[in-house]
Length: 406
Image (cartoon, rainbow, N blue to C red; front, side):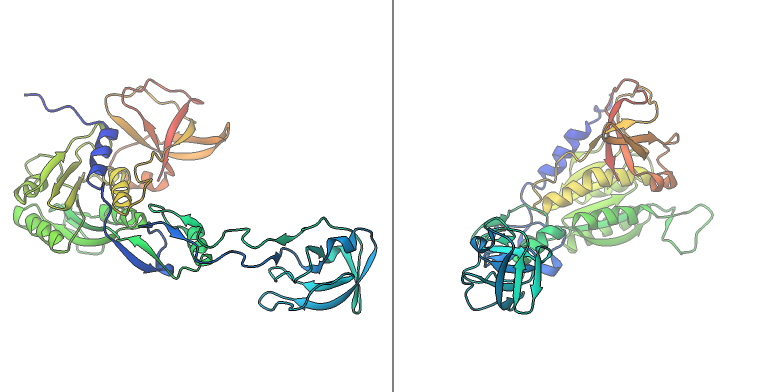
C-alpha cells in the first residue's frame, strides 16, 4: 500500500488553527504586564485627550484679531504652563506666556510662537501674524471619552500600551497566556554543559522553539529530555497534562523508525491524530493531534526542521489561542532573488537566505548554497527563508519571490 499523499503546508496550518477557534479564557492584567498580550474585549477611552485646548508650541496665547496687523504690541498678563494653567481671561490687546502642552486660557484662540516675537518687560510685540487657531490643539483632538480605540483580538505593542495609558486604563482584559510544554526526546541528547558521551550531541532545538513560543506570548514548561523508551515519554505526556498545558511540543522522534517512539506513545496516551506528514522541506515528518484539550505538535529532530516548523505552526497556534485575529495571516513578503534557484519538486521549500540589499523597493535575497537541515550555523546567519512553492519552475537572478523573516 502506498503512503498517503503529503499534506500541503496551507492545509496543515488550517488544521492546526482549527484547534484554536475558541481563544483561552480572559483575565485582567496590569498595564505594565500587557506587552505582547491580546485583548479579550473592546476597550473604550475613560477620558478625553487632550481634555482641554492645549498649546502645540511655546509662545504666547493671543486673540488672532489682535495680531492681524503687525507689528502689534500686547500686554503680558500671566503665564500658562503644563500642569499649571492661567486662570484669567485673555482680553483685547493682551497675551499670556504659554508653553507646549499647557491649557490655552479663556479668550485666547491662537498661539503666537516665540520665534515670531520680541519681548520687552511686561509687553511682547508680534512680528508676524498667525491664522485663527494656529498651534492650538483642540480638546478631543486625539480621542473623546467613550471612543472604542482598542479592539478585541488586537495584539498589544508599545504604541497600544501608550494609548491605553492615555485612555486612563491601569489594567486591561487580555486572553490568558497559552501554556506550552516542551519535551526533547532521544538517547543521544544531553543538555548544554552536561557530560557528553562519545555518541551523544547537545540538545539545541528546545532553546529556539522556546524562544519562538515565548515571543508569540506563551508560558513555556520545559519537560527536559526523555530517552528512547515508552515509559519516559508517556510519563512526560502525563506531566504535560498535569501542568495544564494547552500545547505539548515534542522535539524528535516524529517519524516511524524503530527508535522513533513519540507517535506511538502519544497514541497510547489517547492522542487523536490529525496528520503527520507535510509537503515541505525541511520538516516533512510533523505530527499534529490532540489529547483531550491539549494540542500536540510533534516536531522533527533535525534542528533547522524543528525551528522552521515551530515558526510556521507553533507561533500561529500560540497567537490563535491568545485570541490574535491575525494569527493565521500570511507573513511572507515580496522579495527579489539575488541567486538562481533550480526547479522544485513536490515539497514546498523554505531556503535559508541572507538579505543583501534592495531592488525595486523590495529586499534582495540570496540563498545559501548549503541547506542541510542539521546546520544551525547557516540558520543563525540567515535573516529570512525564501519560500518556494511545490513544483515551482527554475528562477533566475532578478525574479520575484516570497520571503519569511526569521
